[in-house]
Image (cartoon, rainbow, N blue to C red; front, side):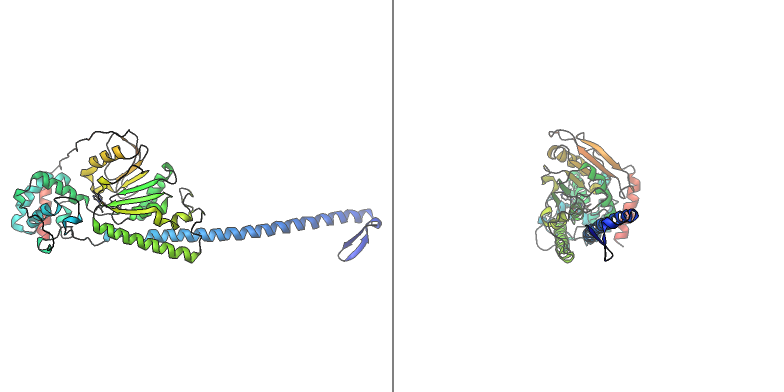
Length: 398
Ligand SMILES: C[S@@+](CC[C@H](N)C(=O)[O-])C[C@H]1O[C@@H](n2cnc3c(N)ncnc32)[C@H](O)[C@@H]1O
């Protein structure tokens, strides 16, 4: 005879009344449901612990990423090193032409001569007077040079073409960096046009901020920068080393697996993984040299902070049209690209993404473009320029 035990009392089921049997069935159903819910609760508890761990890790890696981005801020305030040796720069005449101009700059009696020689080239001067000449500029005084022999040139013996080229070269060495939020917006804008694993290049990479930022925003396989000035390249390498040391220490502290494929959630998707951060050393490379000699044939995104490259835009576009791969994205600031090999993909007018215009192009043409002569646009009012230049000269020499 089947026996059932309820609350420690045994009952013979055959002897139970019809109503008791019905209650018994309901009771058994409740017991089974309770057991099922308890098993479910245990499973949710386990899952909850796993989610909490993942959340903690995700928050830690995002915090690490943010701290790294903070640590590469403010390079625009770095102390400029004067260029004192010919070997510091690949520009042939930078020191000899620059020193001849600087002598006029420092001598009030020669200001007329300086104004007269600069007037035909005001369209290529950045600001009012060439930045290199000024006290914060990259040119030393002749007396500060002692080691290498620099050819001594008199201003009268220097051609107009050499002065113009000197002004263009000097302008291209002006330093600036985009803000952290601008770069965040920039990578948000380009991400939809990229595929993970591409190659990023910064032409004129300065202290390396954009190269390192690229690696911290998107899973590029490689992020490379090329910088002409040796001292800036050195500062960039020091900056990168600091970032690498911080990454190693921070990852150890939060105990994250260096090969972690946990995604880092960013507004434009979750392609960036923990391992992309831990492998920064492999992904970021900084070079010293001239961007016009740099290999861009594998690039997927080329960044140029071209605000001071106005007179070089034709030369830069020509290089990229012929050497970058079709489909490659190229972005510029302030100056647009007018070369027919490029189509405009996005344009952010000044103050939308950054303080100045940002243009993003795609290379569409094939790779054999003839050279296009640079266009010259004369400054509208040279009398107005002269008034400002003279005011600045007297201020510098007072
Ligand atoms: C405006 S800064 C931008 C730095 C960096 N790309 C950023 O956005 O933070 C431009 C840099 O380009 C460098 N530069 C100028 N002409 C160059 C050339 N021909 N090759 C490589 N670098 C160059 C300058 O020395 C300067 O450091």
